[in-house]
Length: 259
Image (cartoon, rainbow, N blue to C red):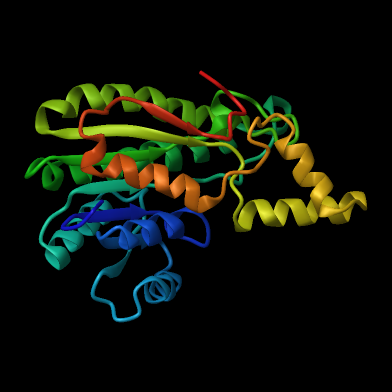
């Protein structure tokens, strides 16, 4: 699906970012992975591509515009072009509702999740314009459906702002051959959610499957989407199979919210 293409994945850690890089490489892409920690990146890159021919790593900070420019330049220098950029990087640890969050919490969420993402997009426009390509942003179902179990008003609002930006970016960058879309997950079965399930199981003295059943109660498919299943949707939007899709948000949520 991605043979001959270069994909840069920004925000690669032990969860969704790693799975997107893995699926992109599986489907034939050359992949530049980025995050702030160079040591962790090198470990992930080696895990995906032991011989280092298909996957490279670059330490970058999305809150630094120059760092984002350097990342895109590194991807082009290593692989010869840039065809798709996926922005996974986000500050998702700001918890609480209105009464539990401070103005500083909101500033941090907006600084990383909105301004940081736009730094990445701005840096990607010139190399993507050379041959057209795709930008895929990662939203959160919390921006559409608040979770009573885990209130995240500042985080959700920042992701809602990115959804609005998606529409404007798709309109502006379309003439350059650049498509802009958003994938919107619900709970994703991967390391962070597994930790949450273990924590709730221990704190409440119940079996893990009971916590999972609570999380999936509103999902018609009855199963938490796995990180790699969300990654499959992202890679589809990076590929030419979605050539006429832009300005869209794709829910990957087992039917929990239907729009």
